[in-house]
Amino acid sequence: MAAAPTVISGKDLLGRRLACQLIGGDTDGSRDVASTVRRLFATQSQDFAQSLWGIGLRTPGAHRCDVLAAMESGSIVRSSSLRGTLMMVAAEDLRAILSLTAERTIASSLTRQRQLELDEATMSHARTVLETTLAGRNALPRAAVLQKLEDAGIRTDAQRGYHILWLLAERGIVCWGPPRGTQQGLVLLEEWIAAAPFVERDEHLRRFVVRYFAGHGPATIADLAWWGRLTIADVRRGIASAGDELCEVTADGTEYWMTADQPAGAPAVGTVALPGFDEYLLGYSDRSAALSSEHVERVVPGTNGLFLPTIVAAGRVIGTWRRTVVNGEWQITPEPFDALTRSQARAFEASAQAYREFVSD
Image 1 (tube, helix red, strand yellow):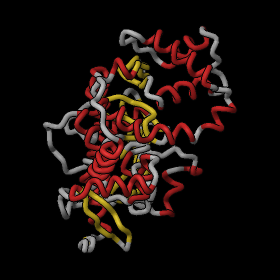
Image 2 (cartoon, helix red, strand yellow):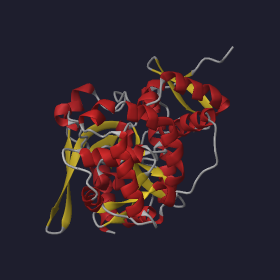
Image 3 (cartoon, one colour):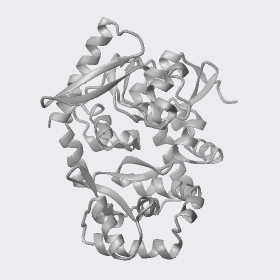
């Protein structure tokens, strides 16, 4: 009979998540940008600038230019790889992720595709245009790509252009690669990312499940099913395949999974300035462990899906922050739910200074 899951406290749950997500208390200067992204498996990137800081704060000594350099080299890419959402992933992981997630994601958008008249003939034409335009490792920003489609007689108005690029990304034809000014260049996935050996679906599931819990644990089965748009049955199948690589714990009566080699008793770190849309919140379907229901409106005003940058202390979201440029200097303003303690204020300012140094290049 299987052993009963270990019982952990809510504080320990948050400390373990922070450690898994490389937030605070980690001074491993040998880890580079690509290693950080690989560890998390995938990180939210709807807001490009904020996602750079999400990677930077987890990579000791990294600056914005280091993240951009990793994109330029092709070691990390940005693509609509999970739930149809833009994510940063290690280049070698993108094909495997799409192999498990794309089919259900595309199927969920069929009604919208019909509304926009994006039939197979249109998508085949668009694919041919982009394969011709981007051949030879050419990288073009969004506006230039959309113009190429228009020149070929493919309408891009009324969100058609956005959905064409989204569908081609989900189908593994294109992804966002090297920086091009303030944007990224669209590239052909087959040219930008080396082909990988064939792997059976069950092995993909095992790897997917283990990688998620390695970068997000402890987390629930429902968290992973939502994050990867997998079925509950597939998640359970992946957990079963993982065997001793994973273990189960409980906190406040809820069952969680994590990797078996995750250190026990990881302390919840001090106060940090996390970016908007950070994986620390967006990596879970249930965010109540870190964010009280009474404060959700402060983090997601109007529940419109736009997550503000947050202040996190000991694993709990205790406020938001905003940044502005005044006379060429970054001004970082905390907006806590309650007054910060002296130690929280000092730690937040240190984190804010780290952000200023990160974006200063």
